[in-house]
Amino acid sequence: MAKRNLPPLILHPFSDASGPGKLVDASRASLVLNGLLPGEEITQRELEERLIDGRYCELRMLFYLGKDLVRWINQCLETVNTGDGIGDAGIRPESFGALLVEDPPETVIQKLRTWGVHEHRSIFARALGMHAVFGALPDRASLAPDFMRYYHRFADQMFTCRQQLFTFTRVSRNDFEFELYASGEYSKMLEREWGTL
Image 1 (cartoon, helix red, strand yellow):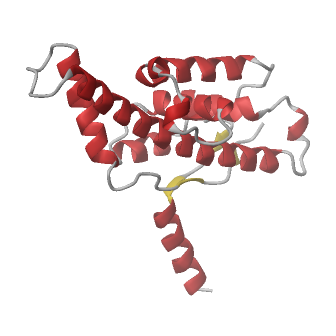
Image 2 (cartoon, rainbow, N blue to C red):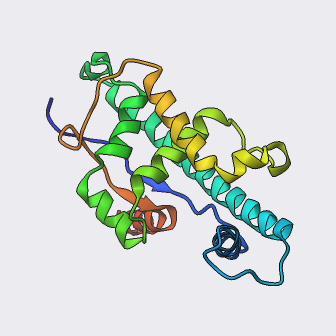
């Protein structure tokens, strides 16, 4: 199979203004709860609440990232199912999920690093795992505290489970290539292109 171009993966912003602060508070609370930082004048309950607030913020970001990833996966399936018979090759959504997590093009990895993302495997896997289970973002009150504390472990397992449900053809960066853009960056690129037409 000759290398084919896939649609660009476009990631949208999904954080609110309070997100970074909640993440920092959660990290600090986790360190205090684990005895790695001295305790402040904050009760155990308040520390737990800060930790859960941060975890929910992380979960929210992963959920919305998962929406972007699933939209891209569906676009990829449409691309490979048009025209040249490649759609009969056993390529399924899981094929592109594995490509994103295990073997994205080097240009994508480098761009993620410039954005400060050094662990794309975990982030993409967890985002896809969360999206496999939740059709809509659950409200915080509907999630058990232990799930919130350890959601990342649940999300890892949900991704693994989703990938194992069906037999699929594995694809690699040798088969397909694609570009990664932030939504604002992609919009500006399109405006420039349309402006030259």
